[in-house]
Image (cartoon, rainbow, N blue to C red; front, side, top):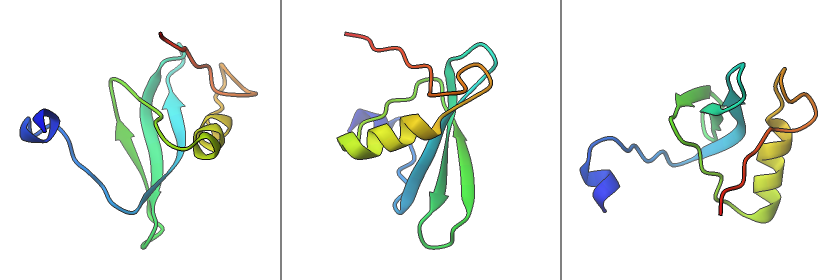
Length: 80
């Protein structure tokens, strides 16, 4: 897998994503998650965030991803 071979990818088991974080201008900048076993909450910065999970979990993550710019629901951009 090229991404793993690059050394720039870390796979984290037991991570439960809580929300996508954005900056003041709107784009996603990080993902917030907690470790299922320890309960410790963490943030992972990212240049690109892809939400690729079940329909229900994707909706849960996006609905939890409010910000000052998007107070009701995450500002998302769908690309075809």
